[in-house]
Image (cartoon, rainbow, N blue to C red; front, side, top):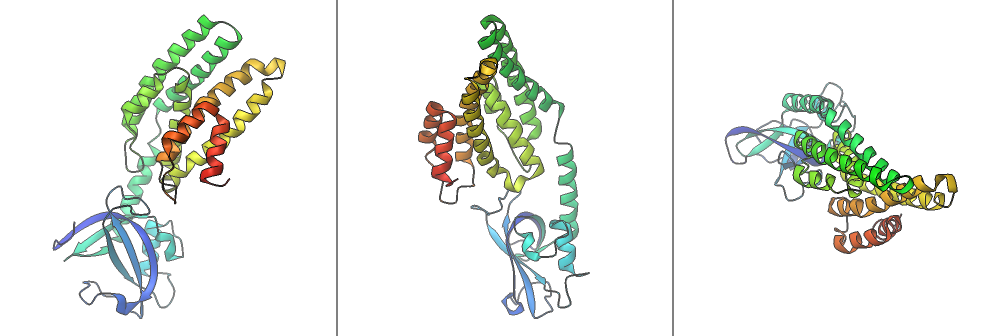
Length: 308
């Protein structure tokens, strides 16, 4: 809300810097009684990204403590929003609650602390028993593939069908429970992916990895797909080599097949993420390449997009 007399808003700090106090507008309704000020640029919005994206950005100011941060309002702000960090630059990327007055903003320290405590409590409760069902479904899908290769196509088909039913239901239910500040998964899309045999193992693994990072480290969640792709390329190569070893061949082929399927899934999700500084890659071409080449395609994708 901008332009109202009084109110509040939430946002995420884009930048935090020390500036001369005369940079603070004369009409700013809160006193900044020192030679320097802490200037914050805050992207407004409940789901604002760390870089702000297209969100409206507003300035907020704090008095820069002349005798050190200890005991100052800046110290209380750092304790409330940045886990007690001592450098105000640590506020960049953190979510804050703002108080608004006559079109100007200042961080509401008490409200920010309360908001963070509520988010921490929600994160602690974010994992659910349906995640166990997702993991069981993924394991059943892998076992189905292994059984179809090593023992009986009929037995493998039964396991694959059970895995598809389990994953479709559990992914749909868990995605609806998960929707929150740090991640809003599309329940229908994840459930549809869980219903497709063989592919659903990769979908289940991708979902669990993405959710774990969204809950534990939401500011860096988009980077997880790079790590998944690195692991997938390595697993693809190891399984290919192990397939030549007699006692391991059936298990290695099953791992190889699922690593192959995971590659285009991870490339698709990475291409949709916000981690690419030079802009998103051509998703369709790279997903097609990973679908054809499996982990080798994932490796080429990493080399071209990251220079790994």
